[in-house]
Structure formats: structure tokens, C-alpha cells
Picture 1 (cartoon, rainbow, N blue to C red):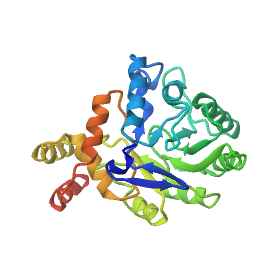
Picture 2 (cartoon, rainbow, N blue to C red):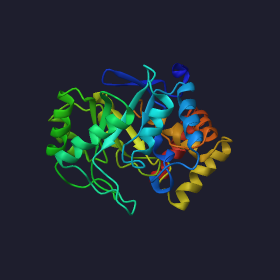
Picture 3 (tube, rainbow, N blue to C red):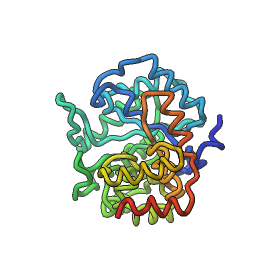
Picture 4 (tube, rainbow, N blue to C red):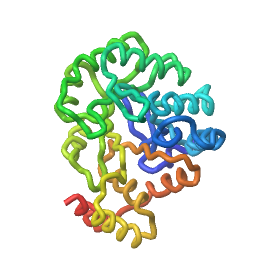
Length: 288
């Protein structure tokens, strides 16, 4: 394992330790995150490369495919290395049109946890994130009933740790009043920085923040500004964006997804890029 030398080092998720550079399995499924991958054997090779590189944090969900990414992870990696920790999400399902309708009723969540256990071949899930809101982002709603259901499953020994995804600060506080969380997964990147204050607050509490869409939502001008810095550093915009996230706060964990071993290695190398104070100042202006 090479985890000690991976960009960013490691971070604790409760009593688990994961590499801050992780892998998001969503892109292993077919187009629109539906159906099997075009290259089944290639997907298995990629997952084994993840382990060979020393990455100990894989993010997935039984809704990806649905069930496709979990089944691939199991086929490629089971029995799992002791150091590997698999994080999954519940709270949304898939419809025939490829949408992501909410599925947060207690029976929905119990079913989803058991399906994740079955498809991954596990007796307990390391970390389950409760997905809130919808495709438009977080929505004002109580998390109590859904989160309490996951706490019951945790007390039954089916879940080790809990987190929330696509959540507002109020929803995070509501969940924390019920039970401890170790992770928040929200949209965040250089251009979309609504969670700046939240990230700092979570860092003080020792709670991980996992951004999704590291290059999503950029305007043409913002993309041009990022590309200018990347060009000067002889790096790709994705490399700069990932490196900036790792340097933004020690509790930020990365889960960039790819279906290519070449891109996986490029993302890993790019995340290790060291940005100077001048470059960080220039990049910080992108969101303004």
C-alpha cells in the first residue's frame, strides 16, 4: 500500500482512517449512471488499480446502475483488503427515465441498506450517507425521521458510521442532535463556494467534507481563469481544481470518478500539485 505517500495523506472517519484522495465509483456504470459499463473487464481492472495505488476510500451507492457499481466492486475486490473502506449513500432511487426520485421513507432506507449489504457482500457498511434534497440541490426539510431510521440500523450493527449528503447547515445540525456524523457530502468547488463557512466549522469538529462536482458549474469566464493558472503550471484544469481542494482544508476528502486507469493516475498526480500563495490568491478570486 502506498497510502502514506498519496496527496493529502489520511483523515479519520470516526475510528476508520482513509486516504484523503479517494475514488468515486459512479462513472463505472453505463451512460446516465444506468446499466452496465461498456467495458466490464476494464472496470474491474480500474478498481484493482485503485487498490494498487494505495487508495483506501471508495465512494459508491446501490442506486448507481442501479446495483451495477456495487456488484463490480464486489467482483473486483472481495474479499476486501482490511485497509479499504467503502462509503455508500441511501435516500434516492432510480426511475425508468434515469431520474433520481427521493426514497427516504423508513422502509425505503431499510431496504436500501440491506441491498447495499447484499450487493457489496458485507455484514456491515463502514459509512452510510443520507442523501437529501434533489437534483437541484439541498431543500428545506426535516431529516429527523430518515436519520433516526439509519440510527436504528446502526444500533443493529448494520452501519458503523453515518453522514449526510446534499444537506444544509440546519439539516446537519438536526442530524447531529440525533447522533454523531463523520462526513458531509455536498457540491463544492472553486466556483461554487457556498459551504466555505460550513467546511471550516466541520474541520473544527473533526468531520470530513467530501465535495462532489469538482469542476461542475463553472461559467466560461471562471473556466478561462482556471485554465490560465493551469497553463502557467503546465497542468490540467482538473489537476489544479483537485490540488486546490486538498489545500483548502485538511478535512476535505476527494472522490473524483473516472472509468479510465489513465485518468485515475492523472487525477492522483494532479492532486499532488503544490499551489503557491500567489496561485491560491488568484484561484480564490474565481468565485467572486
